[in-house]
Image (tube, rainbow, N blue to C red; front, side):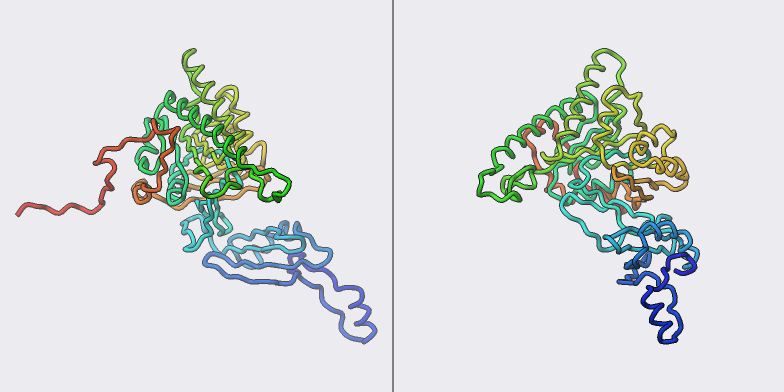
Length: 401
């Protein structure tokens, strides 16, 4: 710590006492270790800073600490005033992602990836209701669906690639749209559902003078369990397909879709409707309303993208230094991504590889948890028996003698 410039001189009273007693002068003092916790991937130290030290001092010295301790990486974060958590990673945890055996899942909170510092990256819909994900997002999306499948949540998919990404997971979806026309109808139905949920919340607000402030209902999570509507997560696989048009009729449909998405992004959080917007390309050239939609998408994740414009559209307004990190993702590191939010912080993350077969099996296992929503009954995917049944990977044995 002394070599890295993270010590402070002893207090004046200590110096005076040492001179008066003719004793050796005390050495500079380093931050006090409150707790040390080793994990499978790293060592976590919780430090109490000395008077005169700041959390920025540790952040600025992280590279020097990495060399001093011969670690792969050192990151720091301020837990509360005067207490800093130092996480030292011994190797590249993103090279071969292994999620910890125990995570901390909560309602609407899904562990989807591993961060570079060895901690788990969660997709928390109650904290960050809407998100934008760009680049090669297939594995990330499968992990997200697989994590949501065991929860009490309705999944709505919009996959304009004829459903090739989301249709294999259809048994866990309450509604699926595989073309832009159907997507427009699904989004209109969701807007109608949102309006109905707000009417329910308004009727249950209980704003009489004898009701404590904490019990006044402002969203679906303040409602009693028997009245709470099921939350809805909308996954849009390729947003650019919804914004492109080639005729006047398609332009009207496009405006209808983007308007519905913006309304859901602005008003859907309290009604328990969350957006997960994905795409390979996302830019202002997609037309009016796109920038307004982006402003509502608090969570941002960018995998490897082909152009700097998409990275700027993702992080330019919240974390400009993350733009350079996003365009420097190597092609051989599939699944590596940069994740940020409106706070300005960002992390390198990588989702564990989940095959389509693994995701399908998880969705089939929890197919009985798929809620039937009245507004979306017409868009519930209809599967044949051969499609719905899980496919075994074992080689069939010959039945002939």
